Length: 225
Image (tube, rainbow, N blue to C red; front, side, top):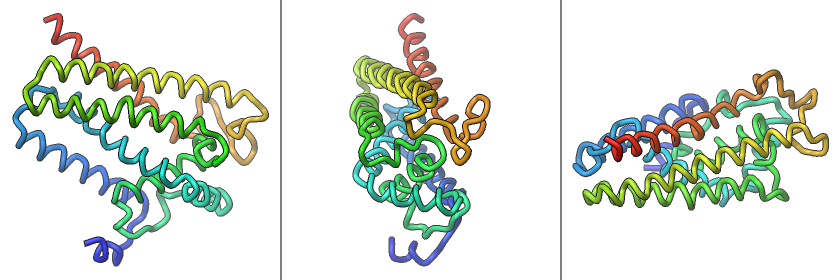
């Protein structure tokens, strides 16, 4: 199958859309066929599944940091973006997609992600994978087995950890962009702009702040009412 996919090329935007379609398609099939999952509201369910999927991408990043570094540098040197470059369709596999995603993020959002010496990005990604992704997986299994209370415990822990992870990451980033010695300090070649407008990929982190609040609040409401 992968050999066939290697025969076709698409740009990065199309690749990302295909990746998302695969994610939503698989998630929808599981939601329909595994009745226990239907106790979860749609938004909370898809965010739980996306957190699990993110953990697989984070594992791909952690296992390929050197490769991410080289691709990020290539993007910067040639002023290219993953979104407009062309790649074979076999890059939809989580490991290969993660390398492309984090290379773009490292080149144009947070350059500590392309640093092999600094462990901050690896610490953020590994803790999210372990404390949010794996616990979300346990929450998913609990829901499948109709263990409603256990699901609520696990998903609350996962979302609480995710919110804390996001707050710490964004807080540290706000410090880095003010430190002239830091790789993320704004320069002519790596501008910041008002409200990070020159680094739009950073806005993806809003999801990892807003969504855990929503899911946790939803669980709290079910306990109150």
